[in-house]
Image 1 (cartoon, helix red, strand yellow):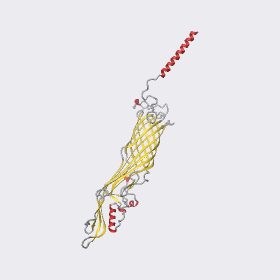
Image 2 (cartoon, helix red, strand yellow):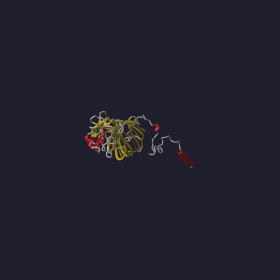
Image 3 (cartoon, helix red, strand yellow):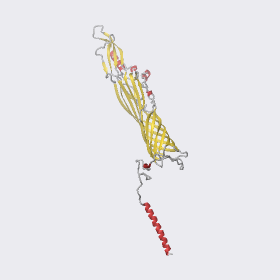
Image 4 (cartoon, helix red, strand yellow):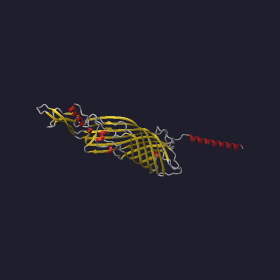
Amino acid sequence: MPFYRTRSWVIVLAALLGAAATAEAQMQPGPPPGPGLEPMHDQILQPFGPVDLGDIREMKLFQPVEFDDLDGYPKGAVGPFFRYERLYWNIHQPAFSIIGSNNPELVALDLSNNTNQFITAQFVWGNRFDIGYRMCDGSGWVTSIVKSNEDFSGFQNVTNVTNVGFFDPTGVLPLNGLLALVGIDQTGIPFPPDPTNDFIPYSNLILQNSSRFVGVDVMKTIRYEPEHHGGVWELMFGPRFFQFHDRFFAQGTTADQAAIIADGTIILPQTPPNIVSIARVLDAPPALNFWNMGVDNNLIGPQIGARWSIERERWTVSADFRALFAANFQNQHLGGATSAGYTTHIIRLDTGATIPGTTTVTGVLGDALFTFNSANHNVTFAPMGELRFDAIYKVTRNVSLEAGYTGILATGIRRASDSIVYTVPNMAILPNGVDHQHVFINGVNFGFNVNY
């Protein structure tokens, strides 16, 4: 009896020692796991927090697509991703404006022959890059960069003689300057400017407008579980910067201006008849003119967005809307040179001879008469919305092709061609009031998506 009891205790003790040895062996630290094998990596992709990226070295881009409906509708891919889209977009034309003064009297006289309606919506290419990651719990981050590669341009070359109306309140344009001198000769008081003289003729005039944009945003994303029909909602929020640049440029050569205005009579130091009729003569040779108006609309502010998608085997369709509540920090700059230097002299009407000592020169012959340079800064509220529709086709488990449509509508924007005050001697930037225009950018996009 004691023998069997002793044997039983020995068996129990051996079992306990074996279990303890097994537990100790399990608790001994083994070799550290390889990179990317830990369930959570410590503070990867700072400052956004720890991210489980998996073993990127083992990513198999060409692994076949897997379809597994046992767990219900797919929620979407997780892990880091890169998305590239080639854009083919256009920008709608600005609000109607005359190329010239909008002074009501000058508009009624029809002194300006051109408008900004030569600026039409033209498609150009651009690029969009999205990079980010999504966690298994639905959270993530995404950064998007969008940029037009070329300028959206409008171009018009007016080869015939054309007029641009300039408001001339002080009478400094050549024809008004001639009129003032005639008044001084006859009465001692300069004649006031004549509105019919408030224009500059050009033998040719080139008009050009160019627009471009660039933007970047950083968005925190939260993806929810699939709905009963399989649709997945994803909310986004974060800061965004979007710059819309618009530039209007005009260049032309003034037409040669010549005019003769009767100037009464003059007594000459000669034997009678020494009272002769005279006239004041103007000669304004051609000169190169230009004006250049540039506007940078810098939209900065918080953005919220939502994305809805549904996946069926290889196909995914999605709709994405983003709303930006931005302050538009506008930078405006205008510079140029207008009109032409000119000469005047007095002639005898009977012989046409120039009376010595009556020639005056204003400006430099062959050069522009006025030069100007001004800048303005303004801040406006400029909300912007963006809507995207995409169709995505999985080629492999990690690589997809996509195509879609994008539309961007922004307000609180200033355009260049209708922001100019056509006045002499200094052209000016139109005061606040035209800085609440709408800009609509839209077009198609296509590209690829690589997701691990």
